[in-house]
Image (cartoon, rainbow, N blue to C red):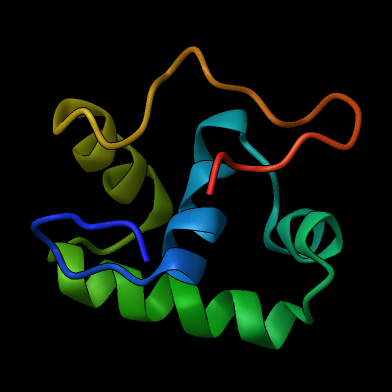
Length: 83
């Protein structure tokens, strides 16, 4: 599990890593071979831990904290988050 001050799980981090790319929840689900329900579950938990109300706030928070990099993109090819 990736350590962070918010206590995010590895799967929550994987889901969150696709947010700066602007992917829809169904696209994140497809990339990670998960159901949309599972992606929603992880986003809801991550949002609660981060104290935010939507994906844009979550991504902005994580970029500001240096946990996510705005230069990282995973849309092209089969790239996956680095954990």
